[in-house]
Length: 355
Image (cartoon, rainbow, N blue to C red; front, side, top):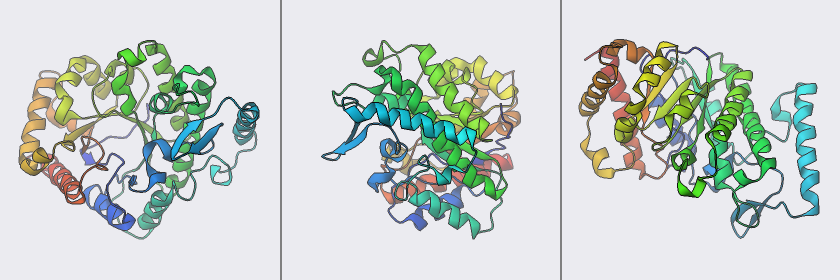
């Protein structure tokens, strides 16, 4: 496990609703100056989560605005072979991924590159930088082949997609490490909320662990810190078993379900891991309007007293805590997204003063 104490710092889940890149980045830097995250702007089609990390995937096609994989062409096997040749070449002749097919393209990385340029020109109390990739389970269950079958049922992609995502993570790490602070990469895994459902009943926990572990290992090998974000509820035991350094969840809406794993959570923090608590609501406009920094502090501290009673003092929990919105803000009106970030910044200010 990579060591980074959360110390009650704020950071962000990826998405924001703006089209104005500088505006979105400015809001992030104001809310999370110690651990800023580059924002994904899904208002741009190239920055939507399912599109942003799949460049270079064998068989990928776009037809009538829909992206899927064709495995039924004579060229597909050759594309897979070429993928592995170029993947292995990176290990044999280490070069920056920036010079390879595995970097993010000009459109998919436009906001990321704007973020890097902005960071160069501002004076921030940086403790780390955060990036993100789509998680392998989410891509494998969300992407389909020409017959509409999810790629998680194609053995070839169970190997290709974690490798591809690992390289997208490594590429971000290479660029962000130039700032001389630790780099955090979150695996965004909204698809894990569906694990165990009837639609995925044949997918085993062992397979999910294998997929997550390969992606985590890629982040660690590149020198990064690995985090997991799941929007809703999941089998959190999988997260605690996957060697993540940070586990992020919607504590505003799903604390009671997460608290079922109290023992594993407290052990995780005691061993140096961090919980990133999603304390500010993002799915309910009424709640965003109604909550205040003080009400959110009261809600969270009450939850922690329940979770850690007799086992860990709240000050110790804060040492191993980051704070985030409950999920991404990409689907919110811009003024609501700005309020979410303002609530987060003020929440952290109160928590760290011990009020």
